[in-house]
Structure formats: structure tokens, C-alpha cells
Image (tube, rainbow, N blue to C red; front, side, top):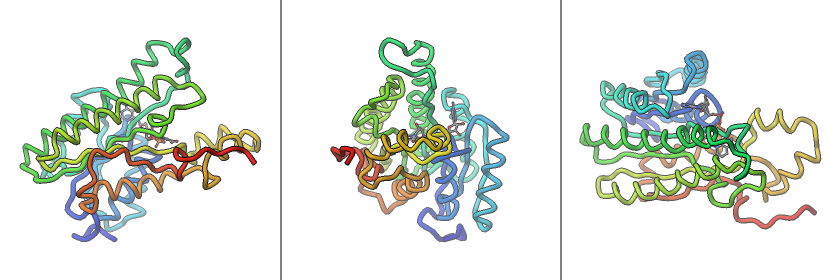
Length: 268
Ligand code: NAD
């Protein structure tokens, strides 16, 4: 589906944070295919330029596809990104997707306080700023509906056996704040949902696993499907949550994990 006034997101102006790679880039591509105007934001202009070029190459008849540097942990950056869409007719959708999991994140004893703060500044405060400025923009433009999607993780639901305490706590906070905002703003027509992805088949993970079959098996065994998820499978869910097809889906922990968090799986 193209952006020539058709598509599941036709006429919607969307911001995607952390859009230069992974889930954010796959979602940018699908949003453009489904007719949205998309502002990709991230922290590196070089990476954003490559991402925008990729979206335009894959979706030659896309509507607006632009980029803006925005560090989600800085409120002024988030405000500027949201206000950038004022001249497009105002924001309809924001996918607060940017997030980090730091290599020095560990357990209760070994997580450095600075890593805790850094993780929470991006993963939690960044989501709050995105929600806050989305609400202000939706009101400013007198929108009757809006969709805010915040990326959490299945670790917010089930915890992680390999310690990453700051990350896990930050994603739990995303679930909690999203639920509350969903209720507070429901009568304005603004929906808030959390996306809960399971570990994905990203280059980062695959490079780390390499050709160590046993290491790979220890992780794959937890998936009833026997495989990791793909970033595009998350993006497909985000399109649904962003579109009016999900008009009665609000405050949900939208789990896209191949059944992982519902299973008690043992190695055969
Ligand atoms: P990714 O690292 O490929 O993408 C994250 C993007 O966020 C990067 O482009 C990065 O530059 C950007 N970013 C980092 N700090 C930022 C900041 N301060 N401001 C703006 N952008 C910033 O990772 P991904 O796998 O696509 O992850 C996207 C989201 O999904 C994250 O919130 C992550 O926690 C979550 N998630 C990922 C997985 C997984 O297995 N990949 C699983 C569950 C949840």
C-alpha cells in the first residue's frame, strides 16, 4: 500500500524515536508503506540519513519521510521533534521506541549507579517526554484521536535470568506509566499501549552468539516456536496499534514473543 491517500495509516503524521536501526527502522518502512508521514529521530545524523535513504528506496511513493536529531533523554529535543510536525498538521502517532541496554548493567550489587541513571534517563524519562509532548500536540491541534506506543519488553513481565537490573526495572516503569496514561487520557481519544518484544534476531545478538550452537540452543529453547523473533514482526504489531483498527485497544501490554512468556519449556 502506498501513501497516495491510501493505506492503513493514510493521513497520519508519526514520529518514531530510535528510528535509525532495529525495530524503529523496520517500523519506519512499514509506516511509510501504509501511508503515514514519518519523522525518524535518533542520536546520529549519519545513521538517520542512511535510514531515510533506505525508507525512500523501499517505498518510492512514500509521503513525507524526514529525520531530526533528538536525544529522548533531553526534553528540549523531544519537544522540538514533536513541534516539527506542527507544520504537517500536527502529530497523530508517536512510537517511543528508543532504548538502551548497557553492557555494564548487572545485578543489584554490580550495577553502577551511573548506568542505572543513564538507562532510566533514556528508557523511562525519554518515554515520559514523548508522551507529554504528544498529549500537548494532540490537544494543540484539537485531535479527536491519537496513538502513543511505548516500547517495553517481555523482561518487564517475566524478569531475566541474566542480570540486567536497570534495564528490567526501566521497562517495568514503561508498562506502569503507559497503563496510567491510557486511563487518564481515554476520554480524550488518546490511546497508550506498550509493546513487549521478546529477544530478537538482531545483528547484535547473532554476532554475539556466533556459531556456538550450544549457546544458541540455550536461548532458542525458551521459544515455543524454536526461534527468535524478527524486528519486522514487532513493526507489524506497531502498525496495528498505530492504526484505527486498534481503536478499542488501550492500556495493553501488547506482547509479541512467539508465546515465550506463556511457556514452561524444558530442553528435550
Ligand atoms: P537498536 O539498538 O537497534 O535501536 C535502538 C535505537 O535507539 C538506536 O538506533 C539508538 O541509536 C537509539 N537510541 C539510543 N539512545 C538514544 C537516545 N538517547 N535518544 C534517541 N535514540 C536513542 O535496538 P532495537 O532492538 O531496535 O530496540 C528498540 C527498542 O526495543 C528498545 O527500547 C529496546 O529496549 C526494545 N527491545 C528490544 C529487544 C531486542 O531483542 N532487540 C527486546 C525487547 C525490547
